[in-house]
View 1 (spheres, rainbow, N blue to C red):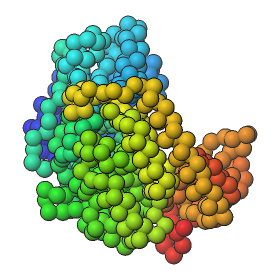
View 2: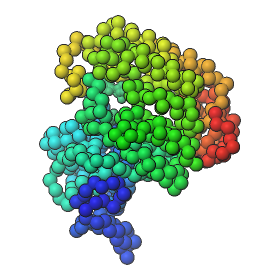
View 3: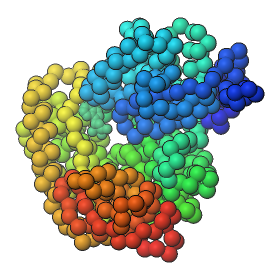
View 4: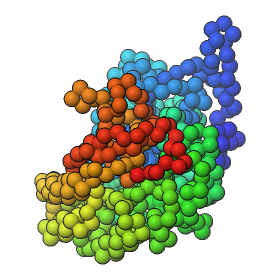
Amino acid sequence: MTTSSGLGSRSSELPKEQWVIDPETGEKSVKVGDINFPPRKVWMKTFGCQMNYHDTERVLSHLEGLNFTKTEDQGDADLVLFNTCAIRDLSNQKFYSKLGDTQHLKKKNPNVKVGVGGCVAQTEGKELINKYKHLDFSFGTDVIDTINELVYRSYAGEDPFAINTWDRSQNFSIETKVTHGSPQAFVNIIKGCNKCCSYCIVPFTRGKEKSRLLQEVVDDCRKLVEYQGIQEITLLGQNVNSYGKENGESLAKLITELDKINGLELIRYTTSHPYDVSDELIEVHGSAKKLSRHLHLPVQSGSNSCLERMLREYTVEHYLGLLEKLRKAKPDIVLSTDIIAGFVNETEEEHQATLDLLTEAQYDFIYSYAYSQRAKTRASRWEDSLTDDVRGMRLREIQAHQTVIQENIRQTLVGKKFTVLVDGHGFKGGDKKWKGRTNCMRIVHFLPENIEQDLQWHWVDVELTSATAFSCQAKLLKVHGRRMPSEAIRF
Ligand code: 5AD
Ligand code: SF4
C-alpha cells in the first residue's frame, strides 16, 4: 500500500486514515485501522541546518493527518519529537541534555510519546533506544515521510524501535509542504552528498545524492506560488550545485525555469560546493531576474595544504577565480562563507592563510566553527597535534578579523535603498522595530510610520541610516503591500 499524501512511492504499512466526527461533541478524530486518534498536541525541537528545519515542517505537516496540532509548550504535548544534528559535538550535546529533560515528562504522564529523528537518529538510533528507556522510537533522515506510520506503530503498542533505512527508490520525489502561512518556502531539490570532505559526517547521516526531476520541482514551485501565496523560494540541498547531474539537468537550468514563474519574487539556494559551481550557473547569476544577489559559498580554509587534507577538491586560486567571475557577472553580488578553525594539524601558517583569504574575498558575513572531530570521518582517524585551546584562539582571531572587514563593507551601505520582505518585529529601547532581509540577505531594522502599523509579510523600501558589523538600521521609505506591484523598482 502507498501513502495517500502524494509524497512519491514510499511503501507504508499504515491502514487508510478516516476522519470521524462525534455527533454529540462535534470532536473530530482520525481512525486508522483499530486505533482512534483524538485531537493531540505535538511539540518538536529542531537542531542544525535549514534542511532539518525543512524536515521538521514536513513531519508536522504529515502529523496533521493523524490529528496532531503543534504546541510550543512541551508540558502540554502528547507527542514530543526531536530533530537532531550531528555536524559538531556541540549540537549533539545540546540535544542529549534536552532529551534527558524529557524523562520527567514521561514520569508525570506515561502516555506521552517521545521520538527522536534526524542525523543523530540516523547514525545512533539503535543505541539511543537501548540507552534511553523513555524513548518510544527513533527515525533517520530518509524515513521522515513515513512519520505517520511510525507514530501509528507506537500508539498501536509496539515496543520501542529504531528505523534508519535508506529510501532505495530510484527517484527522489516529494511535494513541498508548508504549514506556517508565510510567503517564504524551502523547496528541497536534492538530498544526500557524494563528496567525502574528511571532516564531515553528512555523507553518513544523509546518504548518497539524489535529485528531484526538474519538471517536478518547477510544477511544485508553481503550485506553491499559485495556491499557497509563496513569493520567495529557497532551493535546498546539502550540495545544490550537484543538482540534476544524474538526470542530465542542472541548477542553472532549474533557476532559469523558476525565473519565469509569475508571482514568484525571489529565488535563493543553499548550500553550495565550490567544485560544482559551473560557468553556466555563474551566467545565470547575471541573467536571472529573481535570483538573490547573495551567494553563500563555503570555502572552509584559505590554505591549499589544508584544503587538500580536507579533501575539498579545489585550490584557493580556483575559489578566488570563482568569486571574480561571479562579481563580473553580477557586480553587486554579496558573498558569505563557512570557515573551520583549527582543522587537524593546522599550522600557524595555514591559519594565517585563512585570515588572508578573508581579506581578499571581502565577505559580507561568515559562519565560523572550531573543528570538531566526528566519528566515522577520515579526519577522525588521524593523529591531531592541535589542542582545543589553540582552536578556540584561532576561531576568535578569525571572527575578530572578519568583524572589521564586514563593518567596513556595511559602512559603505549607509544611504543606499533596499527592498525588504518584512518577516517580524522586536522591541529596542522601547521602540517597536520591524525587520526583514534585503534581496542580498542583510537583515535591516526600521521603525514603522506609526506604532499601530502592521507590516508583517509586506514588501517595503528602506534606506540604510546606520550600520555596524552585525546590524543595519534603516528608515522606511515606501510600503508596497503584501504583493510587490509588477511595475515597482526592486532595490
Ligand atoms: N567541525 C567543524 N565544523 C564543521 N562543519 C562541518 N563539519 C564540521 C566539523 N567536523 C561546518 C562546515 C560546513 C558547515 C555546515 O559546518 O563549515 O560548511
Ligand atoms: Fe547537521 Fe548536517 Fe544533519 Fe544538517 S545535514 S542537521 S548540518 S548533520
